[in-house]
Every structure is written in C-alpha cells, then in structure tokens.
Image (tube, rainbow, N blue to C red; front, side, top):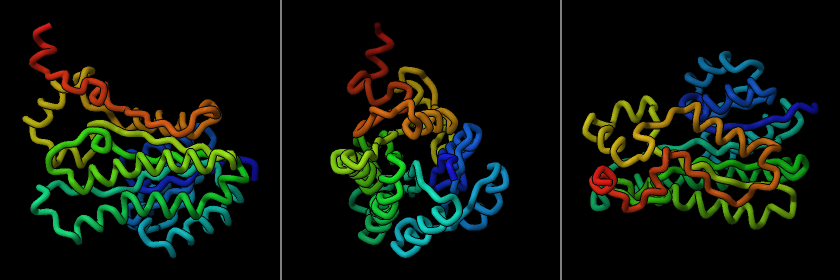
Length: 252
C-alpha cells in the first residue's frame, strides 16, 4: 500500500472525528480508534474507507492490538494523532487519587503507549506524531488539577519525543486547543462562563472542531516536514493574552 495512513484515537466524536473526516477528504487512509465501540461503529461509515478499532488507550495490550490491526489493514502508519482524553473538574482538595490516576492513565499514559508502539512503523515512513493537549496545559486554572497537569505533561512528552525520535525521521508536535464548541462544552459551560471566555479571547468566540482538525492535519502533512517539537495553541489568541484582562482591553 502506498496511500498514507493515520491512526486517530478518540475518533468517535468531536475533534478526533473531525480530523478523521478531513484527512479522509485529503486522500489519507484512516484508522478510527475509540473506547466507545458502539459510537465508533455508528460513525465509522461516515468516514469513507475507514477502519474502526475499539481501544482503551490506557491498556498496553489493547494498544498493541490497535497498532497491529492498523498495520494489518493498511501496511503502514504515517501519522499518529493522540487525541483520546477525558476530563474532570473539581477542586484540588476534592480530587481523589483514583480520579487523578484515571485522568493520567488516559490522557498521558495513552499518548506514551500509543506513540511507543507506533515508533517502528513511523520510523519506516518517516511519519508524524501529533498529540492533542489543551490550553489548560499552558495556563493554570481552577478545578483542573488533574486535567491541566496531564495536558502539561503531554506537552513536555511531545518535546521529549521530538528530541529523541528526530534521528529516526519522526516528527512530534502538539496542538493545544482553546475553548471549542463541542457537545461537552455546551453541556458544562454556563452562559456566564461562555461570556467570560468570549471576553478573554481576542477573537471573541469559541473555536470549532473543524478548525482544530485543520491544525492537526497540517502537522501530519508534508507541509510541516521541518516542524517538530512545537506546541501550536489553536485558541483564538487566548494563551497569548496572558494578563490582558478584558477590562483593560476594553479601556484601550
């Protein structure tokens, strides 16, 4: 097989599914991976020619099966998009160890395990790893002790991957989405929270899944052939503003 192939974790919905559809439109063969087998089977037919493999990315045996299944199906791996993740929002004092470890297992261990298993195949294709972190890995916030810490670790893991795997021709980069209009955000962000985000983001709006997918697809592509070890915040300028308080901006 000569068609480029990408594995996308957390592909049953949201950013992962949007990325799968975009890459498919651009001629890639796509492997959709997700722990939600039922939803995965429902959406897979919407991605032409895709292969769907149910996988818990925190389980080394399931990850090994995912990589083996992808190679059996396509014969190659050119890009790995580590998008699978879970969130938890509670104060530090109320974050129990089981919750902390589950967040780390999926958000951090999953990236490590999938990347490690894919290395031999990515080295053959001189492929790319794209890890999906979050603006919460760049900027601290309340109620995100486990989630934010896991995403900050993903950002540093990306740099470790770039430093070590570059000699094998493998690029590793990270996308850090800001607030995105997903079903989860619509469910948990109150009108007051949405208004506050709009005020704090220079573009004055949430992003959408397709916009994040565009950034991921770029980093997977040959157009980014000399880009590695980078963190691309796709956030409407949110991270760049730092202490640029809305009240100060409005006074300009």
